[in-house]
Amino acid sequence: MSAVEDKLNRIIKIEEVSSGTDKSLQGRALLLKVLSFLSPLFLLLIWEILARLNVIDVRLFSSPSRIFATLVPLISSGELLYHTLISAGRIFLGFIAGAVPGVILGLSMGLFPPVRALLMPLVAVTFPIPKLAIMPLILIVFGLGETSKIFTIAIGVFYLVLINTMAGVLNIDTIYMDVARSFGANRAQFYTTVAFPGALPMIFAGLKLGMGTALLLIVAAELSAAQAGVGWMIWRAYDMFDIEKMFCALIVLAILGYIFSYALDFVEKVVIPWKNR
Image (tube, rainbow, N blue to C red):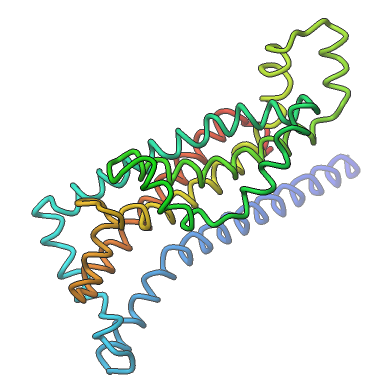
């Protein structure tokens, strides 16, 4: 009986230690979440204090309270929502217009060496060109309408998605290619059953980089003959030296970036649930 009791006591102690460890891990996770929530608020508080003490020049950096006072009427009047929807639409269309051909061409370049040999020199030559440097050419070709703005975003997204997709295909283990070939897979099946699923992690990496680039390019794209949009708001506020309104527009861009990034993360978890296991 003593041996049985000894084993039971050991099991109870192990369970108590395990329970204590779980509680400790939960406490740490909660602490990290609280710190993540409080850190931006702490930064805003420091900013406000420095502004009120005149340590920073409020004419150039304003203060959170002034920015909030400007933000409220912009929201209540619907002006901010209008400009936000305009920019979000341009970002979405430009992102899709660049990402879809980037994925298709990246898969082709990764799967077929002749295609890669033909197109890789063109990609290597044109990719380093700053996208803002070709904006005058884009305006000449497409005019001052929506097409030029969408194309500017699309071309920035295209290269990042293409290169990451191609790299994802090239990193697929050759055994999967050999198995598909031995089962008589045709070209379409190579795309859909081998290359695309195998390259998905790298494709999403390219999509996330492309989304960041789209947010950068929307400001420059809306500088050229735009009459609405968050980027237009920033340039208009710059012309009027309206620092508070400029910060409001920057906050909107940050929120848009967070929403689009969260959406991509959500889709990634649904499409490739095995990645984070």
